[in-house]
Length: 134
Ligand code: THU
Image (cartoon, rainbow, N blue to C red):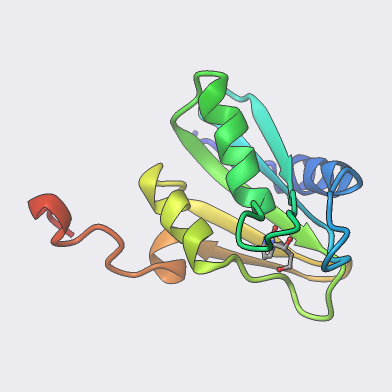
């Protein structure tokens, strides 16, 4: 039987870590959780900065925590916020998801979940760079 994503656990972990978001400038709290292929879940929240540009998104904090703990292969990532529409990851985060080939991404608010493939979120992410194939 093929492995099935437990999106409920991942989304729940993302909501929980969102409570730790450091967002004094935007007041927009985001949570993310990524599950590694060994089953471990890593979480991240957005961490803002007075310089604005140094702000780190929840998704990249989660991936960074995973990599620091030795995880580099993932089944999927969930990202949540209290928005009218499910949140959309920024371009920089999509590129980082592409770096680690995170295959499935769930975008959620309190009432809706939308699942996307990496290819849908960032087509042709690696094609042509350093002579990589598509
Ligand atoms: N943010 C995230 O953490 N993830 C997203 O997918 C979109 C935006 C953060 C960055 C900033 O702290 C705040 O949300 C507003 O853009």
